[in-house]
Amino acid sequence: MLEQTVTIVANERDTDQYFRLVLRAPQIAPRIQPGQFAHVRILPLKEALLRRPFSIFQVAGDTFSILYKTVGKGTDVLSRMRAGEELSVIAPLGHGFTVPPSGGETPLLVAGGYGMAAMFLLAQRSPQKGIVFVGGRRRVDILCEQEFAALGWEIRVTTEDGSHGEKGLVTQPLLAEIRNPKSEIRNHKLFACGPTPMLKAVGKLAEEFNLPAELSMDEHMCCGVGTCLTCVIPVKAGAAWEYQRTCTEGPVFDARDILWEISK
Image (cartoon, rainbow, N blue to C red; front, side, top):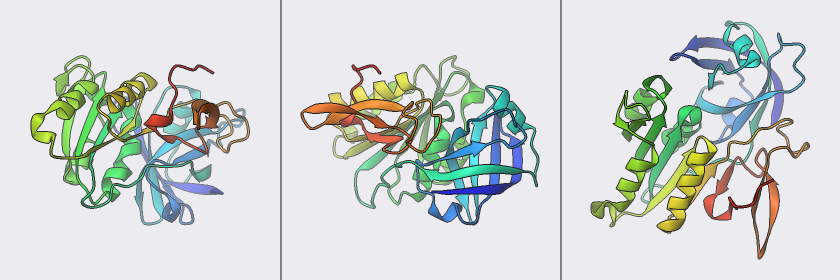
């Protein structure tokens, strides 16, 4: 983990409200593992005390990229920043995904909305190819499709309004693949990032079919470094349970350890 002032290389619109931000960070970029995140302070937004967490999308040389959506004042200000301007970044943060080994379980990546950003680096670094299930409300919410295809992964797309791919929820084609009799000879492992209801559904499928699964939990974070305890979730601890921080022990957890029935 390093705290640095980094320089914007590019900040361009992807689709609709989504932007791709490329940052030059030669000391941070080589340290990044799939599933980790960056905690960003937007320097022009002087009244904002808290940083904003973003999943790390891509790493190339001395740069790393963030794929983000404009949802409030902070990301609106960020979307108007240009190449050459600076941001304060703490990264890489968190416990990431386990990269599937060559010849091991077939990875099934499940991504909802800009959860796709957190999955790309995992697919890129995995020697074992698999299937990417991507879902969103509308066509403009489907991101990174071409990038996943360029890596040689099979892609299955769903949209809730039916504007692209299969109509419905992303867990529908996932369930069909798990149940596919032609897939029974293969071992599967699930990896997921997206809205909490989707993560819960993936976790339940993993439990029902006795499949290993890693879930990147999407919780609100304030400090990002494990101090404030606002991002905790309940997880198993032996015969009991405890709260763990998604910013340090997570954001990626073994699905078998998450206790969905216990609220904070």
